[in-house]
Length: 414
Image: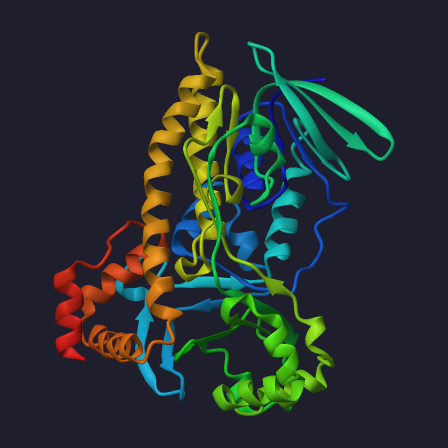
């Protein structure tokens, strides 16, 4: 089998890239070790950057047809539920003054359905990548489908196979792979019709207390999702406290939530998945005609809310550059890959630095840092020009970090 581009991993970036290159007429192979795209108990935000990309590839309206919620703002509260600030999308963008929240598997299934209409795109599930070899004129790769070993020759091999990427390992791409100290519990549930208004309210809420973080938002008119920070990733401490104490703590933030979770099937703490948080910061993103996108290249902390959106931006930039090079008679895919890396790597490094700063401040249990943080948050709420920088960065539209003077002004205003 000979193809133009093989993508390992049918994630947000891989499927977006397959769409861009498939629509351009190239022969695309996508392999994924999973049997199918299955539901996961979490929600994700499609920021204005992601919405812009979906519009560009003709998939924005199909996205809007999925169960989702449009968020024009998120509210940040302290550990006692008192408002600190509101993050308003209308401060940062006129075309998309909102983010879309939904269950990520629904979007992936939607894109996959669209790809099925492209005869030049072959998507194979139950196809586990094994190894590859650079041949000078491309890559030979092997994957398994059950007991059968399959082989293909491709001009470019793209790894979108996640944080523990086997493509990255086999390509010998070096870098720093770190796990953040704190992890998160993630859970989604259907909100009963008789749930208290505090739970039914779809408002996106960030509770940030002393060494505590709890994030609750809606992913559809009926469905809710939360993240709960597990300090030091210490699940044993949570087990010792027990389910009742955990639900009582959630009730302190959102009255009635503990009872709703019990009603909807949460019976033990072991049911709730533990999501570790990793930072992938590589020396380079490619090795010859092998290139990485998404979490394989730059997994980042969820505080910047950019994982899916930056993966899609990887796909948009790489897709356009590969299309240009493969369409030119004397084009060089290596040149396209090098340009992709030079354009994308600096932005993700900036986001890593921002995420590290946010993690140090937001996750802190130090009472002095907490007091300073809350004062700055309240000040930011009074400064639309500075809040605009935050929204523009989180939207993915630009990178506008706060200056020391911005922070100082916010502190005095708070």
